[in-house]
Image 1 (cartoon, rainbow, N blue to C red):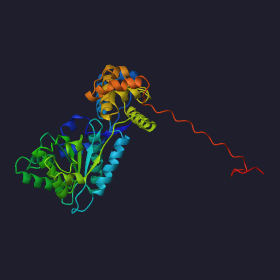
Image 2: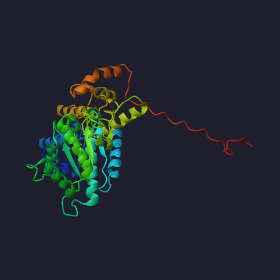
Image 3: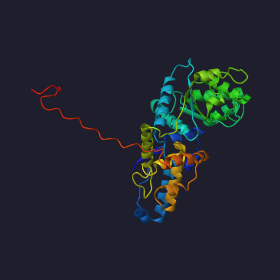
Image 4: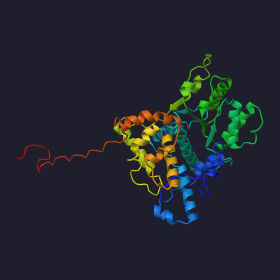
Length: 395
């Protein structure tokens, strides 16, 4: 049996983690430190029919939870992003008199950027706990990572309150903006937090007073908090993150722009042999995680390769949504396998459905393919006659 992804502690139910979301430190720790899930064994239709009602109910539940939590798969995009994150974060281990560079992970929705960053953050959390211990020298709990998700029109006080909520600070319910900032800094220092992840940064409107206020606060954090900021968002450049000045000529954004390294994730494409091999490698990895009674080798990577690409445009989020929903239906209906007819019944995101028609036409007419050409067999070199190893004339 294979292991995949961290599982919530206990019986493996996803509901326990739902009660401790990533906006709370306990939720993040449970995600980062939970034991790895164990893939349910694959049972044939005959074996499924031999189960008792109770055993079948338990098996179906384990399979549902397993499939709902597949991933993340180590695609080339994820590996490249995480390598850059390690480079930057480990380079930010300077003394406190030096400001740390920030990171902006900027990519279209559905490409797995938040998944990749959170997966990196979980690894970072485990590394810090392993190296430094679960408690600081002062006896405080160590929390290497803090994550804050932004909402629309958030202000500086709201942002700092969200940080205090993450740490469950008793002073998070009342106080001035300046007091909230100081309490947030105290939490970071006491808990020796080194990563501050700010998700959904595209909700911040730099044109409004609140947006400029929070942007200035990010500058304050990079100067005064011993953390690496990791921003996650969509179209951050066009929204003003890297601007030297705003529309009024205010240059307060410039320092954030100068200290921020942009990183991205791209969708899969099938425009080259190398790209098609990467797509196939991803599908093979996904295929190995599927638990269905009538699944077979090549069900995903061979028979559904083109279909999955033109249904999703190579966006990993759309692929995972389509496949996982298809698996749930295949298991529930008794089909026990995935094919085009079944997946055609599954509705996914609007962007993928809109782009499907044009892509499907190209694939159906043979003008595009997602399948790499078979590797050509290597030709063996002709043997050199004995006594002629240097290729000279025979004596």
